[in-house]
Image (cartoon, rainbow, N blue to C red; front, side, top):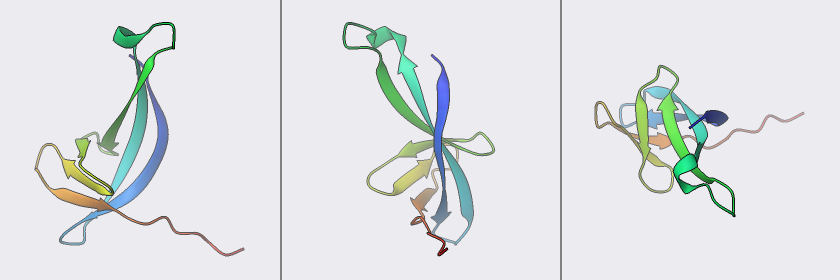
Amino acid sequence: MAAVLVGQFHARDAEGRVYSVHEFQESDPQHDGLAGSALTTTYKLAIGDRVEKLQGDEFKLIQSGTIIVREPETTLAS
């Protein structure tokens, strides 16, 4: 199973700490078939800690149980 980085974003915990989260897509060879392989999305902090997606923009750090919320994307004016 190969993981490919498909995105990254920042999230904050209740105390205001900012976390850099990387989003990966992995193909699952167990589900390969006529329709192609199934893709699984996983999340990790930039430092390698695993992250679980809860609902909407909420995530949980697996190791500590800390809940973090995805920051809205900012757009720079040109």
